[in-house]
Image (cartoon, rainbow, N blue to C red; front, side):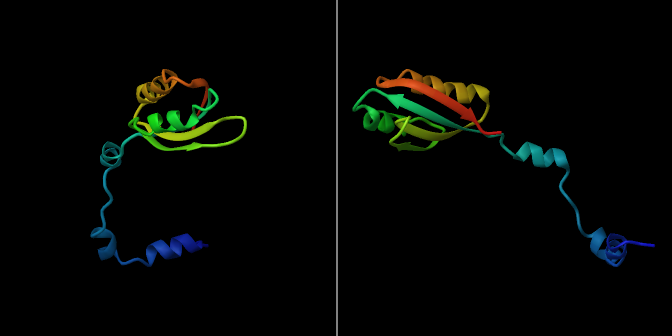
Length: 108
C-alpha cells in the first residue's frame, strides 16, 4: 500500500520536476559566511560603565552593548567570522581601562 508521500510525489507532472533545479551544496556553502555569535558579561570599576560602553561600540563585530544593573555592569552581543576574530574582540575589551572581569559565552 502506498503512503501519502508516494501518492504526492507521483502526482507531480514530470515537466515541473525537469524545469526545477537546486543549487549544488558546495555553492551554497561557498556563499555562506561563517558567523560565531557570542555574548560577553562585563564588570567595570565604579562609574566606568558608560565610558566602557562607548568604547565597545566602536569595535568591529559588536552588534549591541547595554549597560545593566545586577551582578554584571555590561552585556554585549558580538559576531566573529572565525575564532581568531572572537579572540580579537575579547582582547580589545580586556585591554580597556575600567574593565575588571569578563565572561564569554559562545552561542552554539
